[in-house]
Amino acid sequence: SAAYVSLLISYVYEGTAYGTMDIDQNFFDILEATARKAVAIDPGDADAQAVLALSAATKGTHTEAWAQISDALAANPNSYLAVAVGGINRAWAGYPAEGRVLLEGAVKMNPRDPLNPYLHSIIAASHYMEKQYEHAIDVARRALVEWPHFQHARGWLAASLAQLGHHEEAKQHFHETY
Image 1 (tube, rainbow, N blue to C red):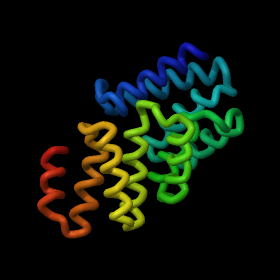
Image 2: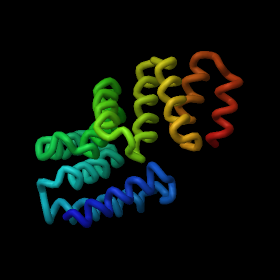
Image 3: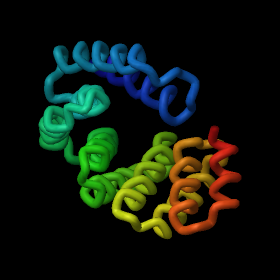
Image 4: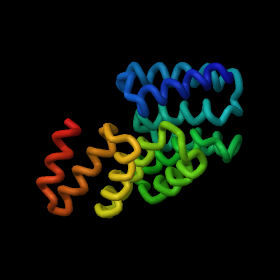
């Protein structure tokens, strides 16, 4: 199971943090197949459960994903990946404040993890969802200091700036993103 989990973590980093893998349906199919192998070997592996939950969340089955995250957190409440994926799932499932708490907790658990700029971009998105545009701008800017070319954060920065009427700056960030 450990070898599959290590492979899964490298896939997640390559796709989200480093941007060296295309994040398309094939990417998620590979994640799911590999996570299922890891879970079959060790059903109590929280990181494998977390990646399996990520796969479910990308399909829009947030209830199934949350059940898997709950299992992962019960197995290991200190699993950075389980806490991070739980936050991602809750934010995109329509619970931005709950997601943000989990995401911020994941960042505190592992402050130097390469996945953190992506987590910061979802924290920015969670603020945006709640019309807290100033907070979204602050979080997105901090993510860009850490990783200047990270497009997810730049997109939320542009959207938040536009909502506050800062159209020229928003346009600049939009063009840098797309």
